[in-house]
Length: 616
Image (cartoon, rainbow, N blue to C red):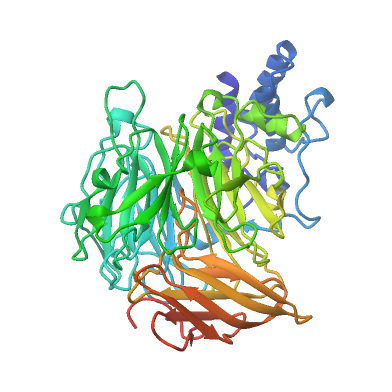
């Protein structure tokens, strides 16, 4: 306790009071070394004493190496028997990706929290909404000015007094043309987590109104996870909320399915739909596992087999049917799971499933598990699971083949395409409330849909706790950046949020603004097939789906697709979710931002207009 107190003191004096773009990113570079050295020096001394008596204490071994890094003495002055070898930085010139949040005024200090990124203002550029877990922590909204700068509009947007929140999701629930925001609260607090969530309606004029009560969404249950989808195909987005029931607590908080009535209000139909699940729900995510246009629901339960409800449809929402098929589909693990998301990692047109691990019995041993992984040893904790969709409502456990037989203890997560290869990469924000749980957040790049390679050492290895994460192209240059909310759960365990700027690449891309008419206006659930020709005239198709990505971090609804070495796009085939149909758009431009509206024969190139969303 004394050792971590000294190390945390050093982090506060240096990374919090005097931060740089390189603070807390391992392996530390000179710009990230501690100038106030007392904390790290004393931590080093005490961890060495601990290891003299307990040489197999891998957790203390890792924290000793962190202390040496902070002093600029890693690796050359670390005693050989205690050295933990990390991969070197991504290039001789330093990091390939660099945190620029402080330069843009986006390095908000706080506890764990959520993030929603989208064009909330309607000017064609992605804005950032964020929360922090503290009960009095003010939410923040930053509008993107389109010139590389951001403006804090929290007060002028009418958000003053909207506080706390562990996670955030967004969508256009009332089909107004402007995305709305839903804040989730009470997670991990068990019976003490009876905090109401908040639905913030986007008024389209730069302001928001809290309409939680009038919309029928006021409830008092501990949660941090929810997801939007039009489950009954009526053109309006519905909301599923996963609540946390602690086994043995004597209190049950069943999950909720709120059907959108189409008039700005919702009705809870979870019981009649068979979706009033009770368990310690840590993630809920909609996907379309069989490409039938109806969203299916995956539920991650911490400490119990996970659930997959196949949407079997119905003639009326009162008779709507869901069938639980997780065991048959082979997607019940890991038993100790946390966030999850559907994504097409192998680009075959069927959504695959990534479910992250979180073995709660080992959350004080994150450093030990991390060191074992570096040494090539099998983890003691459960590992994450990557499930490949076989196209018949069954999945193959592809984890080991993909090189992901690892324990990440993921909290925040999301996916995107850092190098515009056309294949999705993912970023994992790791950690636990314990102050000793300072392991790197980790980045994995997709190699042609065959396996994943870790590229954490490209500048992503931040060792403060990682939470809400969003991949987004903030400057409309075709390259996805990453915004990440950092910070712990305990008061005082604060950290600065990060914005990793993409240095760029030579691959092709297209960004699609999808607008439903018969389908929900956000177009959530829309499947897109982008048919391309490469430089040699070979055909290649890239499959995407409109959603906000992971379940702890809400990315833009714009489809931001890399296209590899494509030189032209032959056509884009769009499958709108029910009640929409299929449409084909011929010869759209490459390396552009294109708007596609359901029912209109022509796409619109909006790259230069600056207005790519909203009512126009």
